[in-house]
Every structure is written in structure tokens, then in C-alpha cells.
Amino acid sequence: MSFSDSNSGSPDLTLFKKGDEHTFELIFDKYYERLVGFCNQFISDLDKSKSLAQQAFIKLWMNRDKIEQINGITAFLYTAAKTECLNFLRQEKYRYTYQNNALQNREKLLNQEVLESFRFDRLEYQELEEMIQSALDKLPEKCRQVFIKSRFEYMKNREIAEELGIAVKSVEGNITRALKFLRKELQDILPLVMWMF
Image (cartoon, rainbow, N blue to C red; front, side):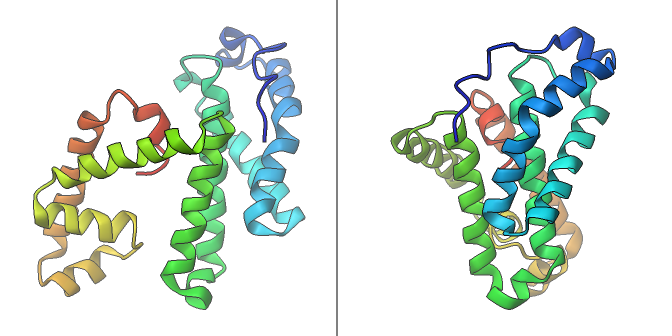
């Protein structure tokens, strides 16, 4: 997947943020087929992939005032499409068919595909993972344990509470604490890892 032309003929960000429909159409025409192809790699259903891609554009339009730079459009669209894909996989009970490991592998593939679409080579991706792991290692043990079970093992708060023998409120508090710490710790690379958390 290449974005070598992402800066050519770029739409006017100011007009887009003001709600100019023609500018939105230019963005749609530029990225729609790419998003459909991206979704279809993981959904394997072209019609559903088209629907998920359209949902990503709807989110973009609804959040257009939050886009600060033109290349933020690309990041937003692929992040939104990735979220739509994961939600679809969960709703279709893929995790009940293939269990959590398969879903975790799919999310890892999605994360890597998004990063590589921005021309990150595998070495840089590995370095990024190491930075995230280093930040996770700095969390208090219980906080880190809860966060990993929530974000990487896809367990519900109630399930985590039962497994660790703690209150659901404690689970929620630890997740909030972990997110606050990680966002501060990873602030320099936050735009690149925002879809991981």
C-alpha cells in the first residue's frame, strides 16, 4: 500500500474544516478505494468493506474540526477504518470461533498495516513496539497486568476483576491510570500509536 501521492493535489484543509462538501468529495474520491481494499484484507467481504470504509468517512466528517494538518486526514481515516474492522470482527463472533489469539493476531496485522502504510520499515516498527513495551514495563505491576488484559487480551472489565480478584472499579481505575501514564510517556510518538490504545 503506497501513499506516495498523498501530498499531490491535497485538498484545502481550511475549507474542509469549515464543512465544504466539494472538498470532502475530493477526499472521498482520493481515499475511498484504498480504504475499501484495506478493510477487505481483513474482512474478506467486499460489500461489508465498502460499508466500513463509508463509516470511516462519516466519522471523518463528524470530527473534521479536530484535524490539525492535512496528513492527519489519512491517519484519521485509517485509524477509523481499523476500528470499524475490529468492531465488525467482534460483532460477527470471530473471537468465539477463533478465540482471542486469532483476534489478537488480526489486530496486530491491522496495526502493522497502518504503520507500514506510512512507509515505516520493519526495523522502525520493531523499535516502535520496543518503545511501547518499555513504557508498559514502567507501570506498576497490577496496573500493567490490568491494562494488558484489557487492551491486548480483549477481556471485559468484569472478567479481569474476577480473574484478579479485584473490584470492577479498581479495574477501571487502573486502565485510566495506565492510559494517562502511557500518553504522557509516549507523547513524542503519540500520533503513531493512538490506534493501539
